[in-house]
Structures are given as C-alpha cells and as structure tokens.
Length: 400
Image (tube, rainbow, N blue to C red; front, side, top):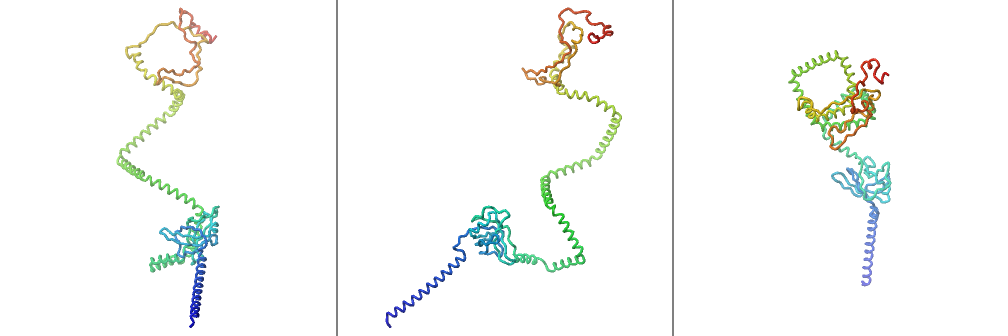
C-alpha cells in the first residue's frame, strides 16, 4: 500500500473524530447555557428574608413569589429552625419596587392539595417607600394543609377507644331522639342571645380588665385583710368572754339616756332660751378672742409682781399715793364721751415682746370727755349743782 494514502486515511479519520468531539462539546455547552439561563444564573436578583412560624409541607425551593397576583421572584432556600423557618427569596429588583416597605407576607396554596407560594400582602395604607434588598419580613399566616388536619385527626382518633366513642355517640343519639324541635329552638334562642350580647362585648372586655385590676389590688392587700380578720376574730372572742360586763354597760347607758332624755325634755325651753341669750355674748367673745388670749398670756408673767403688791409681801396693798384736789364738776357738752374707734381688737407687743421694740399704736378718736388736768389752784366750793337743782331743773346743759 502506498504510504501517502495511509497517512491521508489516518488524517481523515482523526479530523472526523475531532469534529464529532467539537460538536458534542458545543451541544453540552448550549444545554448548560440554556439550563443556567432557565435557572436565572445570568439574572440579577434581590435577596429578601422571611421569618415564618413554619414553612408548610409543600413549600419547596423554586416556589413562586407573588404580589397582587404577579410573579416577581422565587424561593431560593428554606432553613428550618427550632423556633420556625427562615425563607430566602430571590426577587427581581425592578419588580421589588412594587412591594411597599410595610407589606406583610403569608404563605398560601393554589389549591386544597396544591403547592404553596409566598405572597406579599399590601396593607390598606401602603408606605410610599418600597421594600429594600436584604430586608427581613415576618410571615403573618401559613395555610394549614389538609394532610396536616388529617394527621391531627388521626392522632386524636388513635387516642380514642372505639367502643367508648360508640357508647358516647349512642347515648347522645338517644338523648336527642324526639327532641329535635326543642334542640332547634334552643339553638335559635341562643343565636338571638348571642346577637344581643355581641354589641356589649367591648364593654364586657373592659369590665373584665377592670376586674383583673381590682383582683390584683385585693391580692396585694390579702395579707392586711387576713390580719384584719384575725384581729376581728380576737375582738369577737373578747366580746363573747365579756358578755356580762357588756350587758351591764349597755343597761347603764340605757338608764343614763333615759335620765338625760327626761332632763332635756323638762328643760328644753330654758335650754333654748339660755343658748339664745348666750349667742351675743359668745359672738363678742369670739370677736375679741385674740385680744383676750393676748391679755391673759400677758398678765401671766406679771402675777408674781401683783402678788407682791396685793398681799404677797405684806398684809395690805403696797403703793405710793397722795391726796389730790378733785376734778371740776361735769359740764355739758365738754364732758360727753367719744366712741369713734374702729378696726377690731388689737394685741401687739404684749406677748413675747422683743426688747427695744415698740408696738404699733392705733390712733382712735375715743375719750371719756375732756382730758383730765389736775387742779393747780385752790379748790372751788359750792360750784357743783345742788341736789334740788338736779331734781327740779335737770342736768345743766342737758335739760335747759
């Protein structure tokens, strides 16, 4: 065989193999590119975290994320924890602007047995700002699956004994047999009562809250209340032991009240009259109470001096005195008294007087007549009116 032909044949076979490998590589690359493109590997997404009490049985990665029924992203990852679940969402940044910052999240299912999706709940008054990437939103509700209800029902039925359940249902059926109308009437009346009671539920709630507060107050004062009850028990025991003495006291009080009643009934008019007569005097004493108290307290320290003057040191009154000529006889109108003082009682500087101080002096227009002036000349005789003149002619200057 010719060598050149052999080499050409080998080169032709190697080229076909390289072409086949290149085509396979291109197909694999296109498939990988399509898969990555389908998975959103070349799409920029915003991360949002959702804290939920649970994720549900049929919420899986790649589940849809919606707002107002529009799909805006997918579930990227679900992390289960002891206190709930944390769900990582990948959302289109442009679509995330449709979600307000105060939006909530609930996890819903498309059908009764369908898969779940994450739904952003827009409140009635949405915020003017949109949800930011990296935010964490709390899920308010997670739809309960039918299989979960079946599981709970199965757990309950597993704890119930069939024969006891049968006996209970039989007894219930026997009790309701022939009483359908009464039972229906009871339900209707109960519905009416509940409808009438429903408007007062807020008031009832407030009353219950206030009752709780009052109960807390009584709970805090329970110790003092118990001590009061103990003291009352001791007092009651003492009264029971002293019953005879208490009876004697009550009998004496009854006798005293009878005697007092008779005395008051007999002297009712005189007592009322005496009180009426005392009213002006007590009113005047009340008006001058400050001055009277001041005078009494001021005279107290002077009592030793008064005792020395009036019998304290000698059997008589010790004083310096002398005889003086008498005043001129009364003349009218020079000797008329003047009473023009106002201002009430005053008591300044009498009690607890401060040394080197002077009490305020009240200037008043009062006098017993003309100021007294001692006689310096010889006495006048027969200057006063005679008795017969006073009897027949009257007081000079008054009756004539």
